[in-house]
Structures are given as C-alpha cells and as structure tokens.
Length: 293
Length: 237
Image (cartoon, rainbow over all chains, first blue to last red):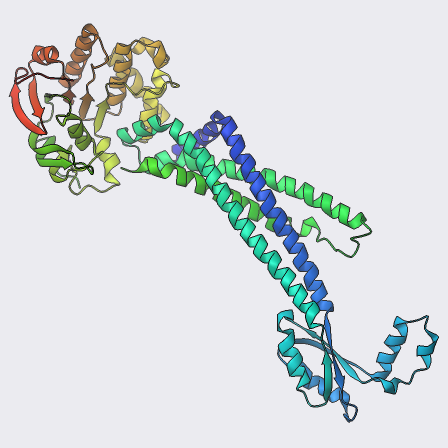
C-alpha cells in the first residue's frame, strides 16, 4: 500500500460511512446491541463465577478420626498427600466443642458438655469441586478415619449452575457474533451494490483487488470500532449502575460485585477486538463477490 | 506472463463457449499491429462483445490464445490481469461515468485507481481534457453535459492512464449522426498520436467513411478482414 493511498483509503472509508448514514447507523447500532448483550452476559458470568469460587472455597469436608486412633494429628500428612486436597486443618475435640458452643451462645445446656462426646476431626478444603466424590472416597480410605461428611449435593448444585451459565453464555455470544457479522456484511453489501459501477470501472482500468477492497475494509473497521466504543461506554455505565444497586440492596448484600476498574481492560480489549473483527469480517464477506475476475 | 511480439493484439484459433453451452467465438484468428485503427463489425450476437471481453480479460478463451499488449491470457496470473488492463483504455456505449463526481474527479478517480498521485492527476488531466475539447467543462457533472460531451469524457477517461490500446464498444451508439462523426474524428486523431484503436460499431456509414481496416464477424467467425469499408451483408446493432 503506497503511503499516499493510505489517506485515500481512510478518507473513502469515512465518506462511505457518512454517505450511507442510515445504514451505517443501523449497522453500528446492531453492533452496539450485540456487544452490549454479549458483554453483559459475560460480566454476569464472570461475577457468578467469582461468587461460586468464593462459595467453593467455603465448602469444606470434615473427616472424623477413629476413637482409638493413638495420634490423630499424625494423619494430617496422609490427608495432604491425597490428590485434589488443598488445605487440611486439624480440629481437636476441645476446639470442636468450643466452636459448637460459640454457634449457640444462648444455649446454656451446651456449655457443660464433655468434649469427649465429639471426635477429633480434620477440616479439608479441596481444589476442584467436581472431584469431590472421588476425594471423599480417598479420604475415607485412610486408616484412622472413621467417616467423612461432604456436602456433595451442594457441590453438584454449584457445578450445575456454573456449567449452565457457561454454556448459555458461550451459545449467546456465538449467536450474537454471527448475527453481527451478517448484519454488518449486509450493510456493506448495500454500499458495494450502490457503488458497483465504480467498482466495475476501477477493475476495468486495472485497479488491484487490494485497492478496491481497502476502503470497504476501513469502512467496516470504523463501524466496528465505533460500535465497540459506544458499547463499552454503555456497558460501563450499566455495570456501575447495577453494582451500585446491588451494594445498596439489603436483599443482595451477600453478593460481592467485582469493581469495574478491575475489569475494564479486558472488557475494552474484547469489545475492540470483537467490534473490529465483526466490521472487517463483514466487509470482506460483502466485497468478495465483486472482486471475482 | 509478458511476451513480446510484433502484433500488439493477437487472437489465435480462439474458441469461447460459455457455461450455458453458448458458443460465442469459433476459431477466430486475428492480428492487430501497434498504431493500427480497426473497426470490428457484425450483427447482434455475432461474438463482438465476447471478443471485447476476451481482450479485456473478463473471460478466458475455452481454446486458443489471446495476447494483448504483451500479456498472454493462456498463462496470465490473477495478479497480472490488472497490469494488463492498465495497458488498455475502454470506452462503453453508455459512457459509464460516475454521476456524483465532476469531470475532473471522474478522471482523477481512474488515475488514483492505478496508483497515480494527486500531483500526477493535476498535470495529466488538463492535457487530456484539452485533447478531447472539454477543458471548459472540467468541473461540470455528467448530468450537466450533452451525450456527445459525456462520451468525450469517457474517451478522456480511457486516455488518461496513457494506454497503448483503446477499445471502444459501440461508442457512437447513443449519439446523433453529427456527434457520431465528431467523435469518430476524435478517435482517429487519437490514433494518429500513436494509440492503437479497436472500435466495435454497427454504423456502416461511419465505417465506410474512414477507409480503415474492417474485420467483420458473424456467428463467432471472421468472415471478412479488409481495408476500405464494410464488406458483407447487413449489420444490425
């Protein structure tokens, strides 16, 4: 590309976009809508995933020690060696009793209980919640462990929510992406149809395909980039508004929304990349048939 | 692939059959020397338009060889087609000017399309417009011009990239007899400056008047190739 052509391509791309004002506006609007929906779903999924991770971290397994185990604390190393075990904390009978009493401060009768009615135990946190059953079996198989309590149902619920959210998110993103490319492609196809005579003349006088294609690519680029910029600003505003609403709501005080300042770089990058890909991909697809022969 | 031969245009045993089975050209051979002026005549459906398409690289022959300004269509790559077209100037019956561009911008547009700078356009366009007698209409739009003037703009556009050959497809088809004669005079003048000229027409009077080489096509074959005027049956546009 000659350097004096670059300015021409950009100028043509801009003027094409403005000369087809309504269609360009429609294409940018559709890109904004698609990116906004994709972005919102992704951000909801990111927050849900963060929330689930927190909950996963809280989800502990309790391994109770046999009554006749001479040295309960010696089991710790064996438990730590089990795959998928993240942390192992020993809780003696005495500590267990103290925690129990703490949970029911108003119940006088619990205060005089003998700690020996409880067992020594280990609180085990695991890395991957999906492997909870297998890990529980491995812990159960350790000599000296009487039985294990693990909230497998709760874990299964978390996993199902996360998987469904991921599938819905990916499917929506894929569908909206294809829709955006299709609409931008059709918009630029109208532009190229309007300019088919110019394209025919350019080809007849010996313009290369690249020369003919570049203004349309810039047009697509500009529409995609503008769409991405507008969508980013709207997403930002929407996210802050929702975060504000969640933080001031009594019903949702347990939900910890990730601050937008921690997310804006990947959001901006993804929006720009998706917008430009949609715009350029759409324009290349639209111009292709005019460049044959 | 670029080749050098004494003929600037050569068709050798060219056959052209379209995908729908229509045989438009049946074994045509023809040579046109540099600087020659040739009328290509024949009735509708005789294969004239297909010959133009073969010369401009819009279609490739089913058999035989077409060589234009050193480029052979037998082994020309897709990248070389634009280079081959830069050696040609094409004029159409319906002018094909861009309505929203001025005369100057119509010419600058095709110069830009082959990589010329704005400075080169500023130097070349006034010269070409003067050659076709339209220097007063530089900033007019096509719809402000008469049919004859629009066709002169089309000639200027064909000339502006300084091609070695001009192919005119029924250039007088939309003009009255007086304008047709003026236009043909202009093409002869350009030819005298050294540009090879291939003119497709069905206007017998014009063909006879200029005493140039006339190649008559019928049913995809050359039925006459002689100098001086049209020989053969009726010509129907």
